[in-house]
Image 1 (cartoon, one colour):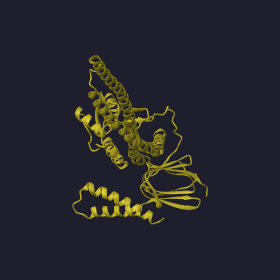
Image 2: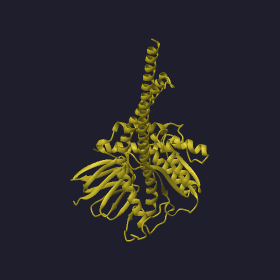
Image 3: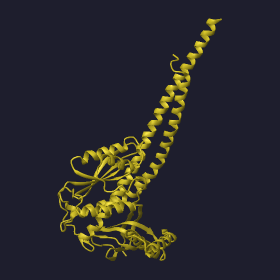
Image 4: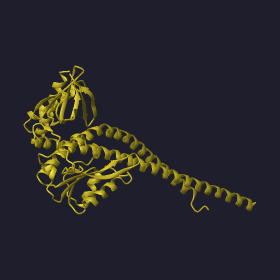
Length: 280
Length: 134
């Protein structure tokens, strides 16, 4: 019975305790960051909803102008903006999104714009062409950065460097569920049911094309910021869940080990008594 | 005057939602005023002061980037940055103005530095002028 010495078990329990403390602390940090990120989503959501609905209204009711943002050139050169985390220990958060991008980009001539350290490391080791490595900290990217990325993207798109632009992010469904998703940013295709609302006359100030050209970069920046907020919240939620289950596992193991420890101790005592009784 | 519904949303959240009598904003081609019954319209915003008239009282704000749209009488103002005059940190705007000016004055600044400084200068000027009109 005393196959494992009580000392070994004691050591294991002690190391498990400290692991548990760390995972518990990480869970608590993630939970508080998650609250912050959720508030951010809540604040910014109306902005995207209005931005999105305005742009789709224009696209769908449009009949009198064409723009490179609308039609696309039909090429195969795609750019993926990939938003992942800066750190690991977040369950499947990073690997899910990276796997999704790989599957999507498989048969395209794809380049990436990684945001977050994990995404950069991943694509560097895969030797995928990267537009820029300037955003190694997903947590530090501000709304201003989003707009400068958007400007960069619309310039590259208009000059024909890319034919499609997608953003890969993790959608924050709830605290317990996050799903990786890929959203097509450009070209903007009217996804209406075919029925034209053509009779809506919109007054464009100064004219349709320049309004469109001015609004699309805004739209891209806005959508990027929105997806970034979602991704950050997802990362914290994923980490919280992962750390929660790690803490639970540690507790289970400690319980198991304590039982073994007590058995071993009891066995040792019993043996000692038997020896004393037999010896007298 | 007949009021109309206005929503102002920036990435920081909903800044205003309610009935107003008049809205004046700076678009890329100059100021436009919107009253009730305006036709459906979309315009990109420039950098400047926005004036909202609520119950006969004027409220001012610094409004930079984004767009304004009127759809079926509902007005949506979707700026990139939006700050009511009373919320503007005048000291910060002043400091940012000084910093930008210093970059523009120095001879060693690179092209990107100058571009960034110019943008910062313009934003600071808008904020400063709006803050002084509260």
